[in-house]
Picture 1 (cartoon, rainbow, N blue to C red):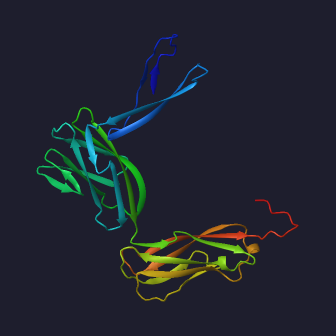
Picture 2: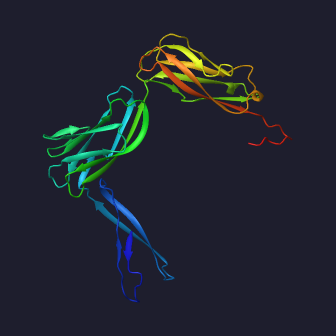
Picture 3: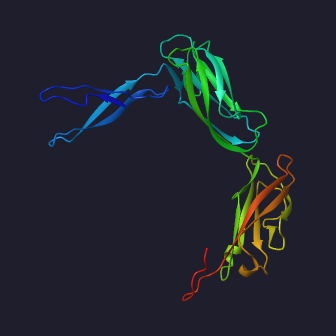
Length: 284
């Protein structure tokens, strides 16, 4: 935002004041440009550059971001080092979160130490982030608000991302079968069922929601292993004309692993009619 003198007399001068808003955790060199439009034919437009060094009252290292990525059951944690630029002792007075999937804990630093390759000295605070108890497979983003005793940085906003995969999951997450005359390959899709902690498990049963339309078979046998391959296919007597439109069915996969004994996988069945030259395309 800029405040300026809109009228400058001939031979006179004017003032332009630029106001640049920075984040509470933004530090380092910052460059901005300001476009000035005038009524002078020779110089109808001026570009002004503003460069300054932003010094934050409280630094957050390595960055004001929390990333937690793993598998259900993992002890996921990450740490941030908070430091007052004025050298005074930092205190954390509270936390707020947009979601309760992430838990924060403040740990005052009493001796010089290294945390996640970041130097921490007495007076700093290490904020440790972890996954809340009971959180299952999830993929979410949010923001946490850290309150401090610094008068110029009473609130520090830190973004977070949490990616928690299930112990056993299907790849892809959805099966797509295309029902089209002359295209037999799309009637079958391969599905990988994998253990993300590299454990061995067995598939004990496959249950299609509509067995008259599609079926599923274990391709690589029934022994225990880390990854299984399942073929999902349309029944031989199903034709494009036998379905009214696309269907969303499901395949239930039963395993012998107590951590995830059952998976439900969406199965999208999409009938298509080939267009023949000289015939109008069907209305969609």
